[in-house]
Length: 256
Image (tube, rainbow, N blue to C red; front, top):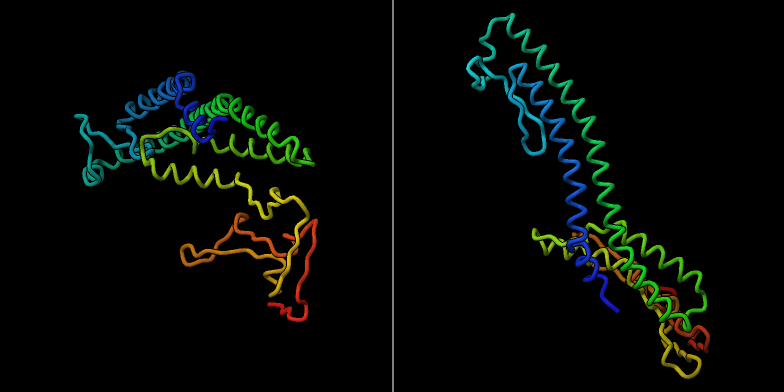
């Protein structure tokens, strides 16, 4: 059995995914560039220079010689010219809004296409691993329906978080930490394991309390708060004795 945590990034970093993802991104960039060129021409016709800055569209008023005008220079223009500039600026803002209304759906289509491609590339890996788990646990699991439902949930969740499995050259430590957080959700918290026993369990509880009898949930400090999750649930004596025998000194039981 291969390691999905290793196999999935290899699939997402492979040539098949790279070629198809580049095709999807190129199709978006061509359409977006065409729409941007039209917007840029619209701005230039109204004496504005348009450019991108930190993901935003920014424009600057140009003078007769094509130089960018300062705010003071713009205020010193004749009143009639300032009125024309205000009108042209509003027209450009409206055109920018139309540009964004046009390109955002295009970007959404691209992202959906990339997400679908990731799932298509990775799904065979997950199906292979899940089938191996089913076969390996076939004789041990009595409720195969619940196991199947759980494995389907795991597969769905992995496919919805594939961005954490992608190979990246930037901030690799942060990506690895995020990947470990995602993988932690798929671990099983085994409360009781009597698989090695030849007979029924026999539990004697000499110091019974609510915690020792019924189990507990452990916490750990994190950023000035106590946090926990399903992996910190601990079994008590009653659960450990399930299917066997249990004896406790009830006279000394104290509800803590």
